[in-house]
Length: 379
Image (tube, rainbow, N blue to C red; front, side, top):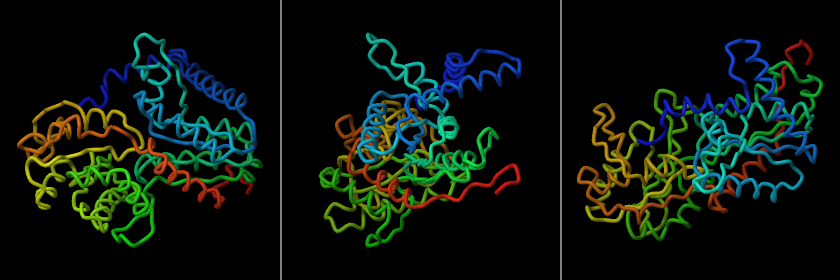
């Protein structure tokens, strides 16, 4: 697929980082450049600090303008909901950070490149520490508590334990830390049980119920590859499908949730479940991303035109074929699946779903994390 051109981006990452650091093979120069980069983030926080409370949103990132628009709307929503906090946003993906800094998301060639700096979570946190914020909340913008969420947890734990050994331990002993969980942090197959999966299912049905009444409504999540299914989070996709289909709606059996990377839940597996549900050839198939934003996966893996019909014999998946192309083909069930049935909108673009993340933030602020362990023998 056109997910990411790895060789090109590897080169780009090096080139873009040069805007912050000078290229040098000398280790001292590298350390100096790292410090210069951190100093830029510290100065940014120093200039923007208005209160003693910081709220950091952490997304994987994107290289698409529509995604940046959704991130902007999310920051604005958080500023409105948390007026006493300085709100910042971070990308955990180095490639996405570098491309944003290079202005590559600007899709209008007439306009100048729009530089955006979504610094790494650990950079923001270090700067918060040096500015002595008394209260710091970190909110994950992930959908499931998987690999990327694990990185958010580790960044905050490293900060709490003075990983760089450049913060004041007396400060770290007193700063209040909070961690907001992903969209589907909790869940079960029980449609009557109140949890994150149920809350999301209710909102998705409000948005996509009319489409499910007209044909199959498919959601494409990312998923963790099975070999590192962090926190066993892949189960949330299965639970979401089960809860959607268990709703007391005449079209409920038309809901399906698949992924890009979860073993046993690729689009080929979704097709098999659709046929078991007697969704016949010619039926409409709608697709929408179950991701915070509509980026590369949504535009290419789901709604793109790629048709690489090489089958992975181990998984049964056609990895280089988009969902749109696959479900319209005889191999995908010969359904009515085209540009008109693609909904290329991320979850953050819906205020009601964005509110579910905000609710997690409010819940997190009721709990102070006790993660500090000094590295100098003082507790």
